[in-house]
Length: 183
Image 1: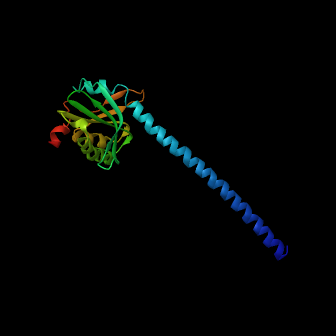
Image 2: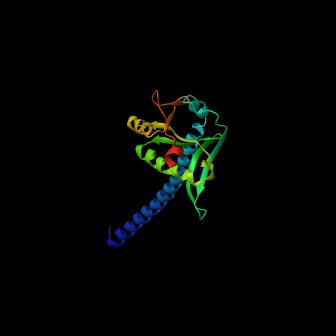
Image 3: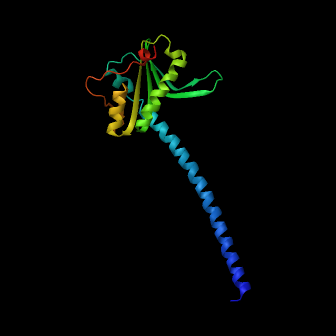
């Protein structure tokens, strides 16, 4: 094979590699879009699963009368920018429960949630509330995370394999009343 033929063959190979690379990049973009959609739908699924039986599970801990449920409540600042969106808020006349749903609960999620609770006091929902509690609902968590969250005064509720909710707090658990902490 002469040098001209070799160069032509190398160019043909390079063109083929470039075409294959373009196809691969297009496939990766399609896969990324599908993955983003799946992750979004997964979060919505966990939030939906967290609804079934939540009020009944909280009633087992003595939190009763929760009649109103707000989904994806946005708290905005003075410039009307969203500073926090809560998955779910349960309300009675003087009780408010902040609910956060997680597929996998981690210690940093607990800490972030505790920080985020303070934003509820920027809304009119907290006005006149004697009791403000918080519940973390999850599919999976490490035992130390569950223990940590309980020590912080949070209701810990696991979504079981059969789609039911099961409280994981110890007997005698006393939830933190964030209305008193904020006062």
